[in-house]
Image (cartoon, rainbow, N blue to C red):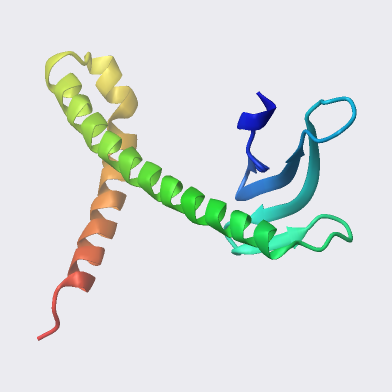
Length: 133
């Protein structure tokens, strides 16, 4: 198992990760994780832990993880939007075929406000993307 372990472990946290170096080369043959840095994806920032100096290999591994993580989060964002479109379609079907008067009364105003807000933003963004004449 020790041969299959990565050199670094990234404990995901809000806006980034805590970075550990994985060590199995010790007398007890146990897995040690030594914190070496904290990553903030929003600020694109890497802070060494304590008075530690990160090597070029450390920085390269952390930067590679940051790039992969940003790509994964971007993919999740667009997937969430596609799911929202499906949810809107399912909500429309529910409102048309199964919703009671009481259920519609409970959600109509909130749905209309949210849809109006979304429509306003989408129309404005679409207009901004149109070529200027």
